[in-house]
Image (cartoon, rainbow, N blue to C red; front, top):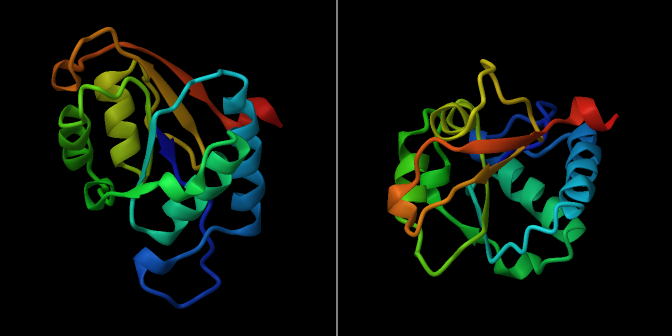
Length: 155
């Protein structure tokens, strides 16, 4: 799970159309490179329909050497609370083992606290959380260990 990179407030556009900033582009690329080291074997990528989340997904997926054409836009990921995202995760097809999603805060913090061992009060922008579930069905996901990739540790 990835929280979108830093967005730009330079344009007077609706929330869904807000792009990422130049810093966001650099941050997304940096985190994508770091994620590549984990050899995750990602089978499907999902993104919120918001431009800042989708643009972040394009940059990171390209760094991972995956096809950007296979990114699926999912309305449920345009969530700022977390319940919709949790519902989305629990409905994922069981034939998928490793997925990647791009979304928003507070939903990302909620999911990291609910499903991972994340104890901080906020997931910063362009932060990736890798969950290590040991279940046979997405419907059974519960608290597990997670790895958090923060920009702060990469700079």
